Length: 331
Image (tube, rainbow, N blue to C red; front, side):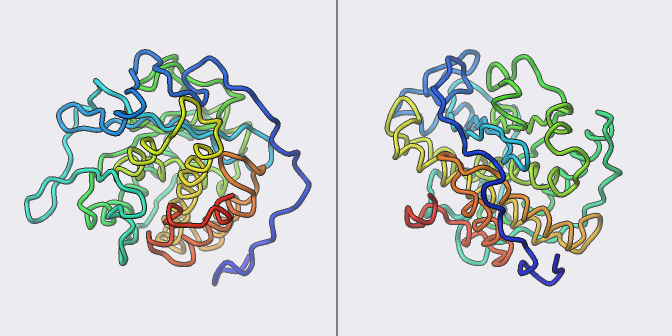
């Protein structure tokens, strides 16, 4: 591994993992289905852009971890809910204007030139198998992610709500019923701005591989950044059918997921070489994005890595504009 850049990354191995099997949508709220699933009502197709209460858009994203060595189904789902409120206020800019999400994709203020996560020194505790150890590790990492992403969101005058990490799986959350272990390893719920990373699931997938744990949480936090900026809301309005099984809808989901990889790597570039995240550890975490199966919802293995490297090398959010990329670049 080369500490000076990405040239030390090994090429993603070919053929060491089976291709993602075909699967049919399942009758649960985590399947690719836009139907409403209690307790979070889903807005009708053409009005799902803004489901707001007291000015707060709640976007629910249920996604799985980009699997590293063990095949897992990797599905991303974006929902815009109505009738829910986080109960927290958005921050404002220095000129007094309230920060608010902007429902735009390529034209989102967060993707403007010159915006980048800020430096942060991540003081991470020892990584262990006990739930309390994982909770402490993820909590410190989430604090570091917030510290790094805050200046980028503030420069775009977009919300900076805190995302928390839970190592326990609730039977129900603001996103409805929890998925099964075969559906996700970790996922982000925008309704309560929480990353759910159950202890057993994460240890079964990542063991004590620090790079994999960091890559996972950074990717999930990337979805939180998409939620805060309004990108998820705009993406939801692009969906063209009740189910995400159309080619057009899967392309939208791939753009979401590949951007989350890029956002995760942007954070790693900002903190590499400081605190608990050495440059070699950051390089390993970025490389981990290239060890998943090819997926029609998350992109090919090569593109999952290439978009992560784009963020890591460029160090600015504009490089993560998957929405302007040609279809061949997000396949």
